[in-house]
Image (cartoon, rainbow, N blue to C red; front, side, top):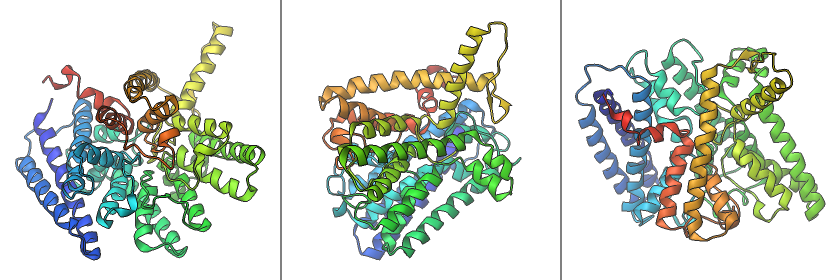
Length: 479
């Protein structure tokens, strides 16, 4: 274990967060809020700690897989611990556990909140919540790879540990250029949504927070009714951009480079679009037939809710907890599938679901034709045994963590629907569930134990389990 490299890179992570904490200070100055002083003090403290940690460069700066996982896991833990301080110290959220829950929900792009009256919060706090979505959406380590000349040649381990999906590769030969391309696409899409929202008459502050939350597929609202009070035009814009941020960014890279055939050959993107359309059609029909809803409004709300839940964003325009049972069942199912690998969305990921289906098909075919040899392919290319092994291991550990979390949270005795969808919302980084934690509810009434479990689930879900688990494995810390 290269402890010096870990210490050095964690110093850079904390230093980067110190710089990011300055932005809420600017917002506080604009709106004349005293909370800006707290953000400034926290930024100065983080800058001092970060500087002390990186003042001495490591003699050996190489980062291997183990160090990569540890750095990423510890980075997200430290980001959350420091990021929660201004929320607590300012008095916006007096309980530190609640502040930690809120900011972990922000960084992991979950969007679950303990706030009962979000509209009473200072604008600087609301901005920091939404900005945390944008930071966590693409990942702070990817940001560092884009702007800093870190240890050469081995940074792929940082990207693999932080980026969602069963496998991560380079878009271009140089990893730093890959990170830059990802962030350029990320920024362009964010600015594009911001401009569309402003064109629709949305106030500037609302537009900024909404664009940041959509880009990170987070879902922290700055209004009590989330997106329900905005115009139909704005709701449609947000629907479209939630869907776009749930697409694998490799698709956009192919489009930009005019590799149209490669882009539309991506099986995962085609499946993602197909699931979206099918879910919207089924839910719309169910609402119109069972509840007698207006067709136009039903299509709009169904498309928004499916896009929000499927991409694990969490915004809402309607209380889908009041929809017919079939519609709620469809939403719960797509909670688990999530968005594409290589996007800012959460969940198990469409690519993993496809691999599970393909493996099941191969098992069936081999049971019929035992002497035949079948290979599992994605986009015409064989999938390696290592990827399949990792995918299967992910599902096993995912189920174990889900069951253990459900058992602990059930002690609060809020009912099975609330408990089950709470865990699903946490580990899949969605935000709203059903029952007490539906679109019109929140997580304030859960016990401290349950909130701590949920905090861990959110981190486990965003980093896709293994980086967090490795922190608790004794073998990780051996030299």
